[in-house]
Length: 249
Image (cartoon, rainbow, N blue to C red; front, side, top):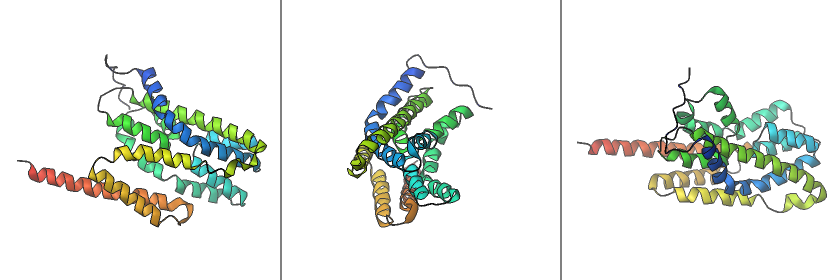
């Protein structure tokens, strides 16, 4: 049985404010995801999926990298089981996201947890991480997450549709190198967070592992990089805690 939601604080943001702030703070990331939506829409519409299939996949799957891989596997004649397993491996990083957000989400009703889990993307996690890092005891932070997720969801559907239409008019759309925009966006998100040595060590470890394991299939290098970064963070956090305990009177 879930605990009731706390009453809003007089000086805290209400539900609508949190929702709008989540959408607003995610706005810069919408531009980064736009090229991927365009390219996916163009590729999917030109495949046997067609426009309807492209829109259905974006609406029901809502996972950019997994959608690209599924589209490639389906084009190669892979079985449904292979497609499901491969996309599951690609998206295992979301387990790490969910684990880090679990303390804040555990009190929510199941309907909220299901919705926010479906809307959880790399971009939304980046935005929500900043919001939950502010210890202001606001009772409606999950509405911030919903605002971010809704903005990303609508953005992905819109650019998928645009890509499907424009791709039919201009087949060269998929060869413009637009996917670099998302990389640049995430660099802008991560760099300001690297203010302390542990954070820098985690980032450098993950980057090194990702580079060394870049040739592994199914994007396993990204999963290994994330696990390596988490391991380094846990070790450094334990050392810091031990040092603080040793200095305590």
